Amino acid sequence: MIKVGIVGGTGYTGVELLRLLAVHPQVQLTAITSRKEDGLPVADLYPSLRGHVNLAFSSPDKANLSECDVVFFATPHGVAMAQAPALLAAGVKVIDLAADFRLKDRAAFEQWYKIPHTAPELIDQAVYGLPELNREDIKGASLVANPGCYPTTMQLGYTPLLKAVLIDASSLIADCKSGVSGAGRKAEIGILFSESSDNFKAYGVAGHRHLPETTAQLQRFTEQKVSLIFTPHLVPMIRGMHSTLYARLSKDVSNAELQALFEAEYRDAPFVDVMPFASHPETRSTRGSNMLRLALHRPEVDGAPGNMLIILVVQDNLVKGASGQAVQCMNLMFGLEESLGLKHIALLP
Image (cartoon, rainbow, N blue to C red; front, side, top):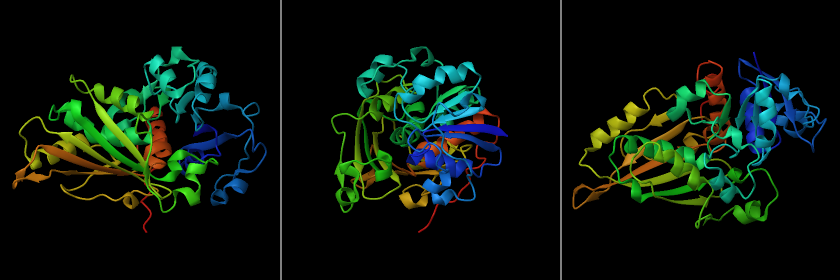
């Protein structure tokens, strides 16, 4: 059994980890930390876990995290970098759901996140935890940087096209929408029910933290200079993410060839569903599951296929966009079946 610790178990990604790991057949939940809720039974805060999680929250100084095999950090940016060095030195594997190790450029991290990086010696060691693109590296990793939710959709949508040199990397546009849970479990005016319900708005238009992460990862797969316009939006729902990606084709290719490209790229990816050409994936088709679904569209111009390709991508922002993906990485790190404990079917309606 894998002894698991979770730092920051009271937020949405923390409780999502608990939901998934509590029924994972190879996991023993060992420690769940929270300074504020120290001593409180987890099931008292989250009744949905009654009968599944019998642990109480403990403050970080009381938790024996060094006795775990792996520790997940479901914390604000900056926490993992402070605690990861000691855990790694003790032989504990670390999976960080925040952004502490996503960017290889330390200066870029400090520019976008407005905090100093206190563990720069670990930046190069960290493996970016997107299994569909980095599966083999994750298997041998001791420190994994879990991707952001938006970057997951953009990378899985664009990468096959970049690898095949079929699109102009200098003119990528991503129009993305997320449910309110993506902002985290906190008291903030913009995400209050009265503010977000019956409302729709863009944010981070001038620049969003997920932009440098996505651009840097996409750049790995092309010799062209990647230029991405990324606009996130907040939609009045709890869970779900829908990214509409635009790319200009640079070669003459048929719709059938494009479809075959994506089907071949993700043939062995248990959590990427390449839907039939011109399908319209819905966010509710992934709600509560670790599945990401995508579909290709190619608008016609004067009755013929145009040179603009549209990729529609949906996922649950808390599962494949966060905690489910982290568990997927854990499975790979410990030599388990990648989909173990993650085969939940989406909730409908």
